[in-house]
Amino acid sequence: MRHYAYGYAPLILFCVGIAPVAKAELTPISESAMGDVTGQAFMQVQNINGTSHEYTRMTLGMDVDTRVNIDDVQIGQIDGGTDFSAQHLALGHIARADGEQFNGVTYNEGDAIPFEARKPYIELAEDGAGLAGFRMGFEQARGSVSSHTTSFSGNIGMKVEYFGEVYDALLFDGVGGVATNKRATHIGLAPNNPGQAAGCNIDGALANCAPLTNLRSITVGEDTGAGDGTIGFTDGFFIGFQRDDNMEWQSIDGANVIDVGKGVFINLPTNMTVDLTNLTSGGIDRLRTHQVDMGTKLF
Image (cartoon, rainbow, N blue to C red):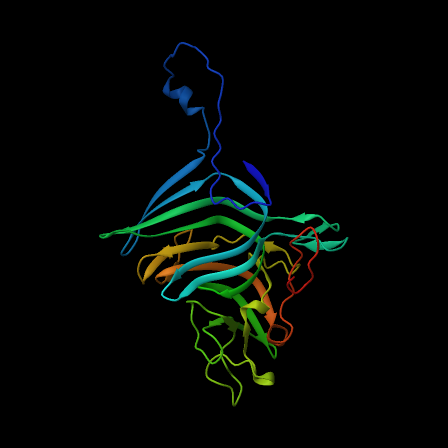
């Protein structure tokens, strides 16, 4: 089942079908006849055992191709700060010119390039004290995410290239701050230049990080390994809400766990490698997310 959704952002879509009333005699069906019947449930429920939590995952058997714009998002406003704060958040984008390519498909100017989401799920985590957290995500997801983000809690799975070497991106809690996954404001890599500050440094040639507002658009997905720029689906895109520290969310296949802390945690796996100089100077351009093109920076 595939749904197309443009211009709105529901968290859960409930579809109710009403059929005409029919009267018929009920007759038993044999086991052999039942064996010839196949089908797939609209919702699948799984109970998953964990180390310190028990999980219940409810997955909807539906596909969604969407393009969404949200003016302002504030999540986790507590203790004098916000876990996630972003303006002009968008999923999916619009081609700026004829011949624009995205994930191996060629688009014309004005064509919608959707964010693809497969099998959305909600997962509950319980311990001896009751509900310990829940998360929402997709078993498969790929597409663009654009925003003007000023506070981020979670993980952005991006690579940063610096003088030919590739490193995992780190989040920082401000200029001069240390690496963190809680209410970060900057992104970059660990310092490796003589004279560089121990944490986030934005000073000219010694800069190793930049404000998150410089990361205007990213691509959620995985590298297919084909070398042609195509993007594979990722199963790691989710947003979680936790009561305590030391929550372990399992990957969809159960092979790995992601350790998260109290509050909000957003996991954004990407296939992007960004040059550090581009990130710390002009930043990453924003894709077109509105019918009236607002430019490559921000409005």
